[in-house]
Image (cartoon, rainbow, N blue to C red; front, side):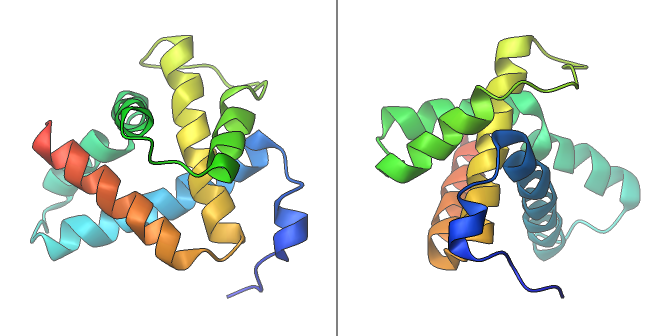
Length: 136
């Protein structure tokens, strides 16, 4: 596995770059989680994964995190960096605001991953899974 960026360099990345890696990291957490829950059939995995990786799901997690004051000040800055980033991609199955909020979600995941804040990333993941499973 390639060496992760130094924390200083990771903090300089734009929101789209952070969301790019954050999307991949989040996808791996979701896939691991679904396998641990006992899902094995490809169609079942795909359908269930959508409940975790959709822009709507990620935006709902962010809303709850904001209500519970979950973010540190630094994480909030990286969320806003992702949310406010100007992407060339457009939302396919959701409105633009929801898509931008989900980009912020992925940017936080990317930031925590690249700065090797593993324990905080796991808290983020546990919070997200718990919320999504209670509210699905």
